[in-house]
Structures are given as C-alpha cells and as structure tokens.
Image 1 (cartoon, rainbow, N blue to C red):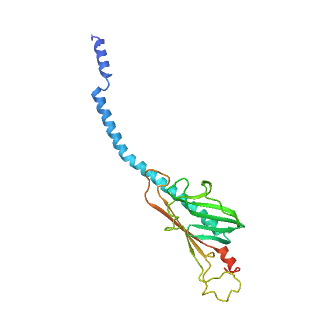
Image 2: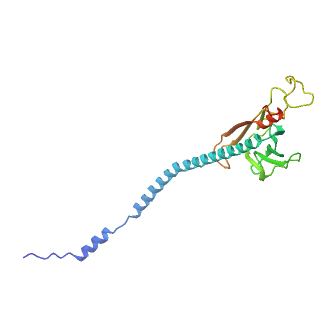
Image 3: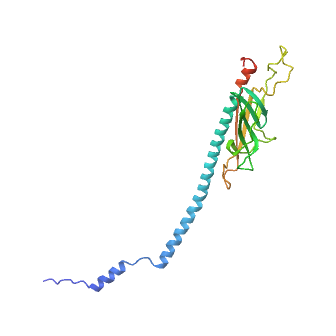
Length: 224
C-alpha cells in the first residue's frame, strides 16, 4: 500500500515568494543607464537628420514661392501694349488703360535686410502708389540693386517707331529705349526661406524673359 505525499505548506510559500522577486536596485540602475546611452545615440543620429529635413522643406518652399512670383510678374508685364518705364529695377507697362508696374529696388517691409518686388497699379497718366506690404509680390530679394538689377532690355536694331517725317531707313537712328523687343528677368532669393536660424546658405537664382509682342505690333502697325 502506497503512502500519500503531503507537500509542506511553508516550503510552497517560500518557493512562491522567491519566484515573484523583481529586479534588484543595481539591475534597475544598469538598465536605465543602458537605455539612456541608446537614447542619446539615437538622438545624435536623428537630430541632424531632422534639421536637414527641415532645411530641405524650407529650400523647396522658397523655390516654389519664388517661381510662382516670377511667373506672375512675367505674365503681367508681357501683356503690356505700351512701355511707360524701362529701368533696371522697375518696369511699367500699359494694359487696357491701366498702368501695371513692378518695382524691385525697394526695401522688403517685413524682411528689412532684403529688397522686394512690389506690384503697383494706377490709371493711365496717374501717379503710382508707394510700395506697401499689401502689394509685395516677391519678398526676400537679394538683387534689385544698381550692381545686380532685375530687368535687362534688348532693344531693336533700328528705330522702327512711328514718327513724323520718318525716313525710309532708320538704320542710323538710336533705337527707342521704351520699345524693347525682349525683356530678361532675373531674381535671387536665399534657399533658407524664412528660417532665421539654420537653413541652406546658397542663393537660388531664377531667370526668365518675355517678348513684347503687343508693343512690337503697335509700333510696327501690325507687322511685328
């Protein structure tokens, strides 16, 4: 006849308590130290990567805004039927009886270390208004100076404008400065965008241009 086995209740309690033991203080401190080392190493890698990503976003945004502003300026000036002003940093044309002028040598009212291009409008013959924050088209402009202008004009090879007593050939006459055949536009902006700290240090240059088809047709009586 077999004998029944009776476990010792005190022994069971000792085993249960031993099995439920947690980490010692030393083990916890070592684990926390290791976690901080890993976290610091990850931060050293991810921090510069995040800053670089932010710089790339500002660079991309700056390019998109500058391109859109340049396209708008070229589109407006191309429609001109008469040139009122053809200066290195300001061009004014007449469109449907109204003046449209882009003035690019005035201080940016928000980013005061830069120039800005302002769109000014007025009725034909009226005085153009002063630049304001409401009519800025191209901000943070690096050029727009005497040494680095925005506009350049290609004049006709001869003076073909209509004038009283005009001779058959104007080859020896001076071309009309207000009847350019082509206008080149160049704008420069910082790649850092609106960031005041950090960002890309290079300069982004956008070049465009347009032929003054409407004006050429007007001065040549539709010949072009």
